[in-house]
Amino acid sequence: MSNWRTVEDLYSLYYEEIFRYLLQRTRQKELAQDLAQDTFLKAFNGLASFKGNSSVRTWLYTIAHHTFINWYRRETKFSKHPIEETFSLEQNTYKNPEEVVAQKAEQVQLLTAISSLKEDYQTVLILREYQELSYDEIAQIVGWKLSKVKTNLHRAKLELRKHLCKTEDDRNEV
Image 1: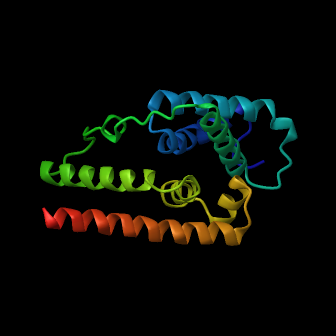
Image 2: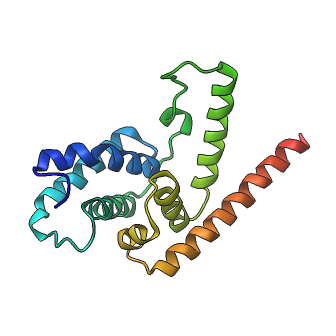
Protein backbone atom coordinates (compact mmCIF):
# COMPACT_ATOMS: atom_id res chain seq x y z
CA MET A 1 0.00 0.00 0.00
CA SER A 2 1.19 3.48 -0.80
CA ASN A 3 2.62 6.14 1.51
CA TRP A 4 1.17 4.92 4.79
CA ARG A 5 2.25 2.11 7.05
CA THR A 6 0.00 2.39 10.08
CA VAL A 7 -3.63 3.19 10.72
CA GLU A 8 -2.48 6.47 12.31
CA ASP A 9 -0.67 7.41 9.08
CA LEU A 10 -3.81 6.71 7.06
CA TYR A 11 -5.86 8.87 9.41
CA SER A 12 -3.43 11.77 9.41
CA LEU A 13 -3.05 11.69 5.62
CA TYR A 14 -6.73 11.70 4.71
CA TYR A 15 -8.80 12.96 7.65
CA GLU A 16 -8.82 16.65 6.63
CA GLU A 17 -9.74 15.83 3.04
CA ILE A 18 -12.59 13.50 4.05
CA PHE A 19 -13.80 16.00 6.67
CA ARG A 20 -13.89 18.83 4.09
CA TYR A 21 -15.91 16.65 1.72
CA LEU A 22 -18.42 15.81 4.44
CA LEU A 23 -18.57 19.45 5.54
CA GLN A 24 -19.46 20.42 1.97
CA ARG A 25 -22.23 17.82 1.97
CA THR A 26 -23.69 18.51 5.44
CA ARG A 27 -22.83 22.20 5.98
CA GLN A 28 -22.57 21.36 9.70
CA LYS A 29 -19.13 21.20 11.28
CA GLU A 30 -19.97 18.88 14.19
CA LEU A 31 -21.96 16.53 12.01
CA ALA A 32 -19.16 16.44 9.42
CA GLN A 33 -16.70 15.59 12.20
CA ASP A 34 -18.96 12.78 13.42
CA LEU A 35 -19.41 11.38 9.92
CA ALA A 36 -15.66 11.59 9.28
CA GLN A 37 -15.03 9.65 12.48
CA ASP A 38 -17.61 7.06 11.40
CA THR A 39 -15.92 6.85 8.01
CA PHE A 40 -12.53 6.09 9.50
CA LEU A 41 -13.99 3.68 12.02
CA LYS A 42 -15.64 1.76 9.17
CA ALA A 43 -12.39 1.90 7.18
CA PHE A 44 -10.29 0.61 10.07
CA ASN A 45 -12.75 -2.20 10.75
CA GLY A 46 -12.82 -3.11 7.07
CA LEU A 47 -9.12 -2.65 6.33
CA ALA A 48 -8.62 -6.39 5.93
CA SER A 49 -11.27 -6.44 3.20
CA PHE A 50 -9.56 -3.71 1.15
CA LYS A 51 -8.54 -5.46 -2.05
CA GLY A 52 -6.49 -2.69 -3.62
CA ASN A 53 -8.68 -2.44 -6.74
CA SER A 54 -8.67 1.32 -6.26
CA SER A 55 -6.49 3.76 -4.37
CA VAL A 56 -6.90 4.00 -0.60
CA ARG A 57 -8.06 7.60 -1.12
CA THR A 58 -10.86 6.50 -3.46
CA TRP A 59 -11.81 3.72 -1.07
CA LEU A 60 -12.06 6.22 1.81
CA TYR A 61 -14.16 8.61 -0.29
CA THR A 62 -16.48 5.72 -1.15
CA ILE A 63 -16.94 4.93 2.53
CA ALA A 64 -17.47 8.64 3.31
CA HIS A 65 -19.99 8.98 0.50
CA HIS A 66 -21.98 5.97 1.69
CA THR A 67 -21.76 7.16 5.30
CA PHE A 68 -23.22 10.51 4.21
CA ILE A 69 -25.96 8.86 2.11
CA ASN A 70 -26.93 6.57 5.01
CA TRP A 71 -27.12 9.54 7.38
CA TYR A 72 -29.12 11.54 4.84
CA ARG A 73 -31.64 8.74 4.38
CA ARG A 74 -32.06 8.27 8.14
CA GLU A 75 -32.51 11.97 8.73
CA THR A 76 -36.20 12.80 8.54
CA LYS A 77 -35.67 16.53 8.54
CA PHE A 78 -32.55 17.77 6.82
CA SER A 79 -32.10 21.02 8.68
CA LYS A 80 -30.10 23.50 6.68
CA HIS A 81 -27.89 25.85 8.61
CA PRO A 82 -27.11 29.22 7.12
CA ILE A 83 -23.96 29.01 5.05
CA GLU A 84 -22.61 32.01 6.95
CA GLU A 85 -22.31 29.77 10.04
CA THR A 86 -20.22 27.26 8.13
CA PHE A 87 -17.97 29.69 6.29
CA SER A 88 -17.07 32.55 8.57
CA LEU A 89 -15.41 35.81 7.62
CA GLU A 90 -12.19 34.96 9.48
CA GLN A 91 -8.99 35.86 7.67
CA ASN A 92 -5.76 33.92 7.91
CA THR A 93 -3.74 36.36 5.83
CA TYR A 94 -4.14 40.06 5.24
CA LYS A 95 -6.27 41.02 2.29
CA ASN A 96 -8.16 44.13 1.40
CA PRO A 97 -11.36 43.89 3.52
CA GLU A 98 -13.59 44.83 0.58
CA GLU A 99 -12.10 42.00 -1.49
CA VAL A 100 -12.59 39.51 1.35
CA VAL A 101 -16.24 40.49 1.79
CA ALA A 102 -16.85 40.30 -1.99
CA GLN A 103 -15.17 36.88 -2.18
CA LYS A 104 -17.20 35.56 0.75
CA ALA A 105 -20.41 36.87 -0.83
CA GLU A 106 -19.55 35.11 -4.09
CA GLN A 107 -18.72 31.92 -2.18
CA VAL A 108 -22.04 32.04 -0.32
CA GLN A 109 -23.88 32.65 -3.60
CA LEU A 110 -22.12 29.72 -5.26
CA LEU A 111 -22.73 27.34 -2.34
CA THR A 112 -26.37 28.40 -2.17
CA ALA A 113 -26.72 27.71 -5.89
CA ILE A 114 -25.05 24.29 -5.52
CA SER A 115 -27.34 23.38 -2.63
CA SER A 116 -30.36 24.15 -4.83
CA LEU A 117 -29.32 21.46 -7.33
CA LYS A 118 -30.59 17.91 -7.14
CA GLU A 119 -28.57 15.54 -4.93
CA ASP A 120 -26.72 13.70 -7.74
CA TYR A 121 -25.57 17.00 -9.25
CA GLN A 122 -24.35 18.24 -5.87
CA THR A 123 -22.39 15.04 -5.36
CA VAL A 124 -20.49 15.13 -8.65
CA LEU A 125 -19.84 18.88 -8.45
CA ILE A 126 -18.43 18.71 -4.94
CA LEU A 127 -16.30 15.64 -5.64
CA ARG A 128 -14.92 17.07 -8.89
CA GLU A 129 -14.61 20.80 -8.24
CA TYR A 130 -13.99 21.01 -4.50
CA GLN A 131 -12.32 17.68 -3.78
CA GLU A 132 -10.59 17.59 -7.20
CA LEU A 133 -11.17 13.89 -7.78
CA SER A 134 -10.84 12.33 -11.22
CA TYR A 135 -13.85 11.12 -13.19
CA ASP A 136 -12.74 7.52 -12.60
CA GLU A 137 -12.49 8.07 -8.85
CA ILE A 138 -15.95 9.67 -8.76
CA ALA A 139 -17.40 6.76 -10.75
CA GLN A 140 -15.94 4.29 -8.24
CA ILE A 141 -17.14 6.30 -5.25
CA VAL A 142 -20.76 6.70 -6.36
CA GLY A 143 -20.96 3.38 -8.20
CA TRP A 144 -21.81 4.82 -11.60
CA LYS A 145 -20.43 4.29 -15.08
CA LEU A 146 -17.93 6.88 -16.25
CA SER A 147 -20.38 8.19 -18.86
CA LYS A 148 -23.02 8.85 -16.19
CA VAL A 149 -20.50 10.81 -14.10
CA LYS A 150 -19.54 12.97 -17.08
CA THR A 151 -23.16 13.50 -18.10
CA ASN A 152 -24.26 14.44 -14.59
CA LEU A 153 -21.32 16.78 -14.15
CA HIS A 154 -22.06 18.49 -17.46
CA ARG A 155 -25.74 18.86 -16.58
CA ALA A 156 -24.90 20.05 -13.08
CA LYS A 157 -22.65 22.79 -14.48
CA LEU A 158 -25.39 23.86 -16.92
CA GLU A 159 -27.96 24.02 -14.12
CA LEU A 160 -25.54 25.88 -11.88
CA ARG A 161 -24.73 28.39 -14.62
CA LYS A 162 -28.47 28.87 -15.29
CA HIS A 163 -29.13 29.45 -11.59
CA LEU A 164 -26.24 31.91 -11.23
CA CYS A 165 -27.28 33.83 -14.36
CA LYS A 166 -30.85 34.06 -13.08
CA THR A 167 -29.58 35.35 -9.73
CA GLU A 168 -27.41 37.93 -11.50
CA ASP A 169 -30.37 39.03 -13.68
CA ASP A 170 -32.55 39.37 -10.57
CA ARG A 171 -29.91 41.58 -8.96
CA ASN A 172 -29.60 43.77 -12.03
CA GLU A 173 -33.35 44.40 -12.06
CA VAL A 174 -33.25 45.78 -8.51
